[in-house]
Length: 143
Image 1 (cartoon, rainbow, N blue to C red):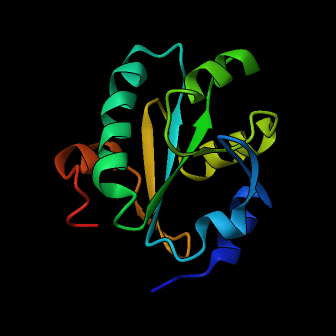
Image 2: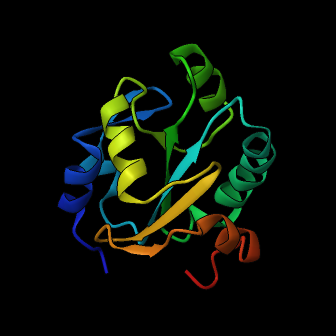
């Protein structure tokens, strides 16, 4: 099931931040079985503890199983965002999109970070507690 990528364009905008500049949301998320919104920040110790594990699980299993991760930064400035994003093997919401970040935080009722919201291929919520889901199933066997 490829889902409806247009729902992600509506949710996240036309462009996402890739490692080498902007990428089309449509191209990046087309055909993904699950999209994980990763609300995190460099200043947050639990985030810095979780990110390396999450990155390893993503690189090892989750990406191959058709999942994509979008980092939604709660960093206080763009330099912190850039430093932190260097450690991540996935995409990000462009840092300048602060209003959109706030909208996403409200929409998914993000209370604290790190938070992972897992969406299906049509941008419907699978779980708001993706951190526990991923920690309990790091290979994505049950996604």
